[in-house]
Amino acid sequence: MRGLAFHGNSVAEVIDYPDVSPRAEQVLIKLRSSGLCGSDFSRYRAKGPNEHGGQLIRPGHEPCGEIVALGPNVKGLKVGSRIIQHHYEGCRECEFCLTGWQQLCEVVDKKEYYGGSMHGGHGDYMVAHQSTCVPLPDELDFEVGAYLACGASTAFQALKKLNISGRDVLAVFGQGPVGLAATMFGAEMGARIIAVDISPERLTMAADSGAWATVDASDNNSTEQIKDLTHGKGADATLE
Image (cartoon, rainbow, N blue to C red):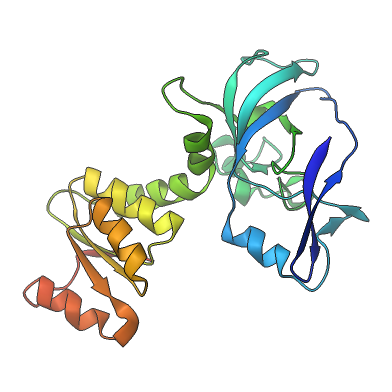
């Protein structure tokens, strides 16, 4: 099967990887979409290749697709299921794993990172543990699913922790993929969003995503601009 490889030094190549089959409690996913993250670019620009155990690792930790094969003992999933694949796998026994925070797994040698320590979604197929598969509703297409796999969901959980409401002014610093998601979700939660960036294009996208106001931070006076917009009060919460 084909997949993307980062050789380091800003060299990327589509190469042939060995075909894969699911083992116990694993599924085989036909990838339909796989998002690019800033961490992908850091590996692309790294001084050397992204390897694990001497093997070139296929990147991609925002994958979305459909299940085409099941390994033994898979429960709750079937061939044809549309899924988002979560990129962390843990021991599945510690407190963090049992509460959905596999990335904080306490058993270090059992914590894996799809697209980092093991093969990810920038390819034709991937295998993943059943616990990392999140159902994708039929109403959402695969591109949206890939965005939800990491970028958008990162912003959403941060906003939930902030517990914002329609009473709040939220300043979102940076309007990249995660920041724009925070702007969109925050506006839907009722908050007045002040979107901050140095790119006019990104600020336009933020306004289209529901920002109440935009601030160009290229002149380094974003704090004063936010105070002016809020009659000296400032933002109730900030997200960077």
